[in-house]
Length: 339
Picture 1 (cartoon, rainbow, N blue to C red):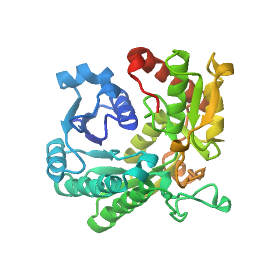
Picture 2 (picture 1 turned 90 degrees about the horizontal axis):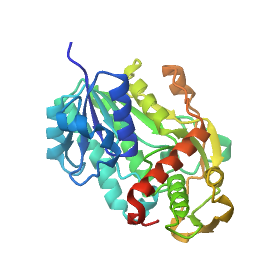
Picture 3 (picture 1 turned 30 degrees about the vertical axis):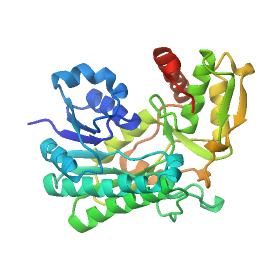
């Protein structure tokens, strides 16, 4: 029997690259990854020899804005599983580029699902929405269940509402096996430096290397988050499509460690030998006009269906995140510009 094929949009990102790691290690699937021609391959560098030899993993080039490229990529991949992870995924950026965010995330998702409908209608499809769709949730609705009202607090979150609804629409209208997830905060190695905990870790690593003064610039430290490890997240995504997938189902997925953004910063600072010399400074440019400040999930629906539970403790995630940035700073040095 031929091996299954997984098609991953956004394979060069944090989640996509960790998903590729997981599938290479835990399955016999062939992997086709969609990336833009200018996407850096740093997160896939461990797989470059395998990619060059065409062994189990290959890259195809396309763009969520380009219907023809998406259609050709899906047609050639003929996937059994689709993980649609690609997006303009930075909430703060979406305030400056709302139309770009909506175009990429909403119309891009429609293009992917249309291509799958035409070329791989029997594929099991994972559409990655976001916990940001819930936005500003009143305290009495914490923890957040799947049926909580959407109240998006950024153009990014609005775009993910569209993504979320598209996934369910294609399942209901066309009989496709599309499943939608709202993943709450997940982080770890390879996390982009536009996200709070990752920019904290990057700045700490740069301070330790004496590339910048001993000041960590921050935004809102009071937002409450429930943090999961990205490696637990991709294990959840694999289980999503393989453990009795239910067409049209939608799930909240997240960790069990809830803390403020300030407490995340404290955990990272505690790991640094320079912690006593480092000051914290509010940077107004890092503040959102409106923030989703209570992000605590109820994951019982997904856990009951799949048996998934997070396994990697928060402390290990923070250690690995800081270790990643120390390695990146050592590798690239002064080429980094702090944000």
